[in-house]
Length: 441
Image (cartoon, rainbow, N blue to C red):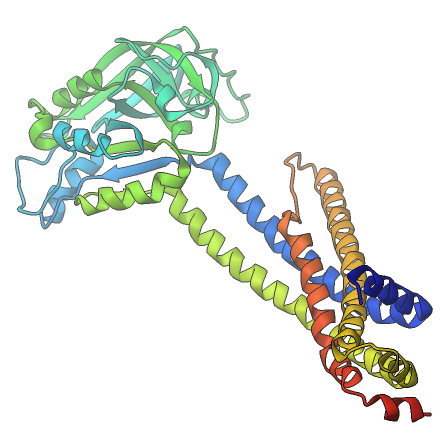
């Protein structure tokens, strides 16, 4: 029997019992739709979580800290406050971020940039007229912050001597120290291109504060991105080093004391984990937001498997219905099977016909289930979006996301379930003795 003849016969047989086929396929529709909706829900939550992380954190970024080995805790605490100090202390297993070490890290394949950073170890107060602000002061060993891929609210990313770049929150966090209760909040100044005063403070041996005023011009303001840059004032490393030497009262030797931290940028987020592992193997401490994303992805993959398993239970119930339908069909068509064999049909032909009918029921249910699941996911997204808008939230939220592979997988899986469900009834039909089948009433 030719393939297309067999296919035509299968379609005709299914068409003769439209009601029974439709009722049996409904079970497959429900099971397939459950798989599609539940897995789409887990995929949507995963995509929403990772996309929000991408907005908050640069997934190609690696933060590197020095390894101070077995140095005493009071010695370790010095670099955390800034100033690049190790106090001249040493440890046999320490790894400092010296210029040589930074060059070795920058030479790792896949590293786009490696920028040393240093915090100001004293007090700092930013003044504009009567208004005061207290940003965190950070020196960066680069003349262009474009290496960090910050979105600029205004201005430029290049740093020259006597200039600074402010984070979005730091540019709008000015207060009037003389403001009285009930008085209106002061209007935030427009800092771009303006000259500001940075008052640096250190304390002498008696605890008396000593101040130093530095004039800076604000050349850029970074757009708020819910990260550390929101609260920072970035200056050139040579200026930060001079200020730190003033606070500590000694010269800083970077080849001996190193830098506080290092920011490494990978050429691609896919390379971040591998580069971080290599940096850790060199003896430093490297961390990246990509590690968090991978952990979240692992959780959501497990969630997809669990949700898919729940939907698969509904398909299992539908499989029992297909098996029952096919068994009843064989009883009703026993004489037809005998007649087919009498005119030359082989056991393989009969087996193929009934397996095709069972797979056809699974395929019909799979198509309906995929359509229902996809449509249901779209409705959930619309309902959630309208709800979020009604709550005043303008951030786009997607509850479900249907990857391309999911409908294809669900359709193939539903067809396979139908095929396996009809295997036993089909074997019974194929092994019927023609004479016995023709005598069946």
